[in-house]
Structures are given as structure tokens and as C-alpha cells.
Length: 65
Image 1 (cartoon, rainbow, N blue to C red):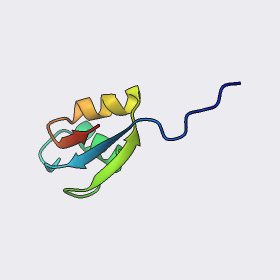
Image 2 (cartoon, helix red, strand yellow):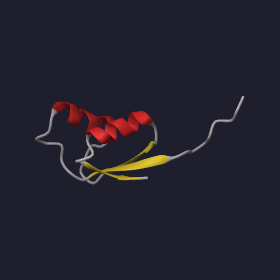
Image 3 (cartoon, rainbow, N blue to C red):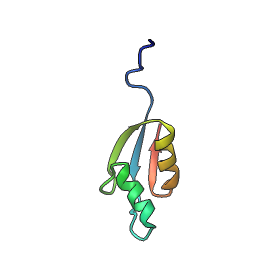
């Protein structure tokens, strides 16, 4: 059985614009990523699910590879 990669690629997401005034699903996506306040940064593993969430709210966040 192959060893699982420890670490792997991550993506850093920073909330740079408030979700106030945007749709409910965009607000919920911000919360699902773990972003609670402005200029907060979180790290997630780089996978298609996280990429899809980021794509949905790209106008609200800053992304670092």
C-alpha cells in the first residue's frame, strides 16, 4: 500500500471584502471555508472541493498558492 503524502499542497485564503450584501450561499461559503472576520487567513488542502468554493467567492478573497 503506498504511503499517503504528509503535508501536500495547501492554499491560503484571506477574506479581503465583506460578504454583506451578497447572496446567502456566498455568505455560507465564506463561513464554510472558516473565514469569520475581515483579513483573516486560513489554510486548506488544495483539492477540487476547496477550489470550487474559492471560485464561487473569488471576488471576496485573496488566494495564495
